[in-house]
Image 1 (spheres, rainbow, N blue to C red):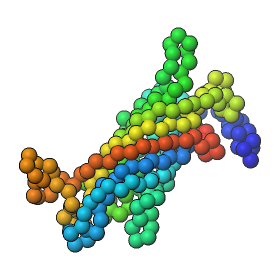
Image 2 (image 1 turned 60 degrees about the vertical axis):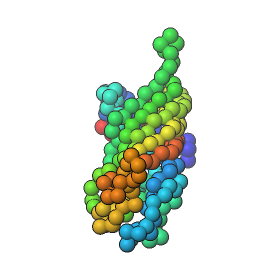
Image 3 (image 1 turned 30 degrees about the vertical axis):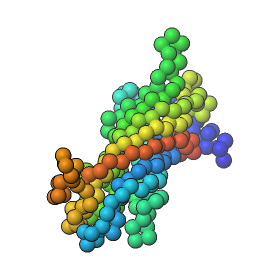
Image 4 (image 1 turned 90 degrees about the vertical axis):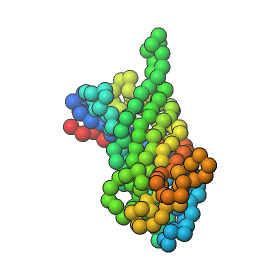
Length: 226
């Protein structure tokens, strides 16, 4: 099966050559993040504390074969393996990533550039929200940075000298709002004051931090768009 997929991809790339306008690679994505989760707040008497959550999905990197700045990153099938609502895992609708930096670093002397150095921002809207809008009060607003490895892919890409990013991992930081306001509940979040927490709920955004990893999925990669 692997040989069949590789042969198909190779023939596809040879057929389109430089005329292909966009090529999409798929990565198995996961992150482990400390999330400021809200507990038992249906009557505004709950609390908020950090929980380590595992979120998985697929990360799609789409290259423009003409524009070097045309690389885009998007996500699909993003699921929280830790947090459940009504017995169902929380899933996320992801906005296309912004501030994408998808680079190699290396040596001008040797002309070899093969260490991935990447960063991007992403917004993840959880399905437990009642408001159909991405806002900092109800969504994961994240910034990713990482480094990784690459390998020669001339054989299956069908072009001499081809190189593909095979793995990237790094750190992720950001914020998550409690979403309590949309439900009409009092958020268990307070702004820090000079002597004590301010009494009123003036903000319900708290910090998120963790790690992430994206591993190249060859079977789902190399999709060509004219």
